[in-house]
Length: 568
Image (cartoon, rainbow, N blue to C red; front, side, top):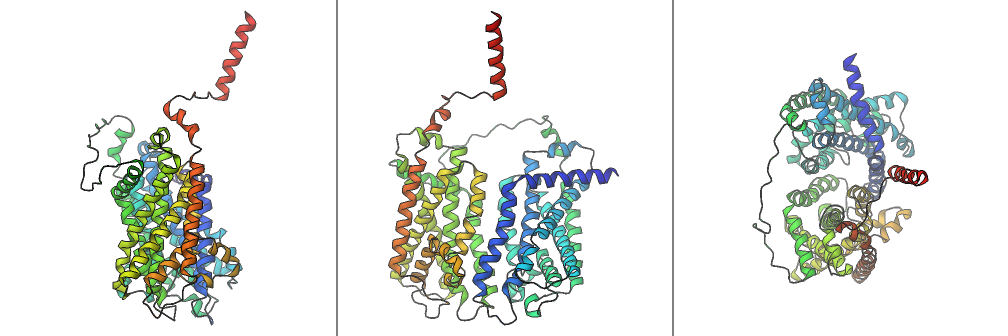
């Protein structure tokens, strides 16, 4: 009875945390809808039809994505508790460590099951034929998959102490697991050297088991299961048991933190560090613009996790997704077609992460110095935009070195035009990022906004498939997307010497240049105007603004003073 009460308390707390986080709930449902609708529509036009419906094939994989993100984000809450929150109470409570781990895993598993139930109506939207027994088997498959993934997440969280380290680790866990799971394409189409990773991935067996249940009455070409259900169940159970046991054992080695959390551990003295000394040096700034650009470059180079994820994520897309879809899409070398689109992804993520730095500066950092400095706001915005554009271009140039590996012959003139196209694309996206950062005050708000901006920009751009193949109601979003013209221009320059390209260019090069330049100018002007409305923060940052008293305290003081006056 006591064990059940403890588990119920832990599970209830985790559910309250998730249900109170509106941003997490919104992104949990928006992300799979974006993937299912846009990516499903784009690839459905390229993959031969017949009895094969890509939307139906994709649906269990998208549910697997929801379970994956939900399970690993729940593990993120454990890392947050260790660093800031209620882990200190769990540490000193007379509760076995294994029970704590089991409670958190059970909460994440049930949360994934809840999300899967909410997404069930999508099966009727895409006309999936299934009965009640099939649906119950599907929910059991979701439960097993969530249990295995939640146990894996707790195993990772048991050894990671900081949120930023967990975020970097998840960049190298979430998307590799998703791309190597068969959620988007059959895993048998992947290269032979990737097959061991596919076989060790618990999401592979979870998605396969969900397809067994949900698509049982569909054509074999649609369901395309790869393992026997018994094998899927056995692997998921074994993975969950092993990860749970290891997580409980590692999570139990936290006693050394208890004195520190109770205030008995001595604080370490901060170690003095000499600023500006290191292997990476930039020349001394000669003016405000060079100082802003230099600072942004130093910040990017010193963030090793950002650098690693900048190159790891697109490489994963190019290798895994490129190989998987190449076997499904006829009519050209898909990986050759994909390379400029992946370079566009590199630029997109780099530019919007640079804009995230501006939001961070406003909330915590040196924005107070820029606010009181005799520097025009427009120059600050232009400096940050220029730095982000140069960084994005540098990353694009580094990634373009993969062109000879894929047999792409590029002349010197075409390559210079490609660099110019990359810079124009980066400038437009950096201006858009600064426009968003000019009005957003908190990091979490920016992160939520980016969930609804980054992937729609990427999926609507024609980076993965010709944008003309998307349905008619999506075409206005395609035309308003600056990345559409950037990817099209880079494809025209980088693939100028290729004869057998999957699809021709969609716009004229001059039109691409004109749209990107106009978009950058408009966004820069708006960002400079909105960024200029920050003067009301300067007195507060300098300590001159009077702090407002809470309403209750102010009313009490007014009443007491009025009473004294009346008495006199």
